[in-house]
Image (tube, rainbow, N blue to C red; front, side):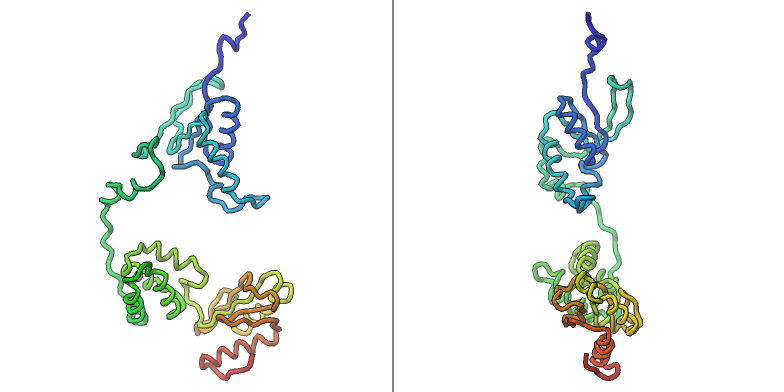
Length: 303
């Protein structure tokens, strides 16, 4: 006698909606059971939010180290079909016997031949026919005009001029005014977004005004347990500014850093390139007065 299951065999495929880490593992588990799997994601690639993470809780494992084996296995599995840039439009039927309509947005490339080389992007007629906006030329303020123009002129023709230009401008003004970054982008041909990204990536650069003397108080573990917090408080009281602030006369900027590589001299601080190790609270005022005197503000005192 035939059973109901043999009369109506449930043979078909499974649909997994969402290509995050959970969706990828579900697709692998289903495919391991011999079921054809369609893995649908509305984004251009699977991976989900986890692909954007550096570390994962609670083990602090690298996110890509966790995902990469699954990505490779899914890409090679004959029973898993990836449908990216796709959206579920409708579901008809009931569990075990249903039909799903999926709308797949076009990529305008032959995906079976795509190797990810990026040549199509460089030669895309749609992108390359887009005309840039008519952006007015940047005119620098008199305080920056001559110096910045001279720096750009000297480096303009060299290979990779952006970093040398930014380094010299940073040395000259200790920060990047917005108009200066726009001018550098205009004169070198780099997109402003690229120039701004470089200017904000490195700790040595700043897009807000900084003091002539940057005081970095080490708050790493060794320095902290030896009293660097008290040093920070005394610097703050002496300079009349809080950490991460700049004095009104643009002479000092006070910063907390995690390590300056001088654990044997803890507690330590740096002013520019000069390291002051095994500091005591009593020495803080002397250091501040030393740099005030070096800048012509009052007398010079021994630190």
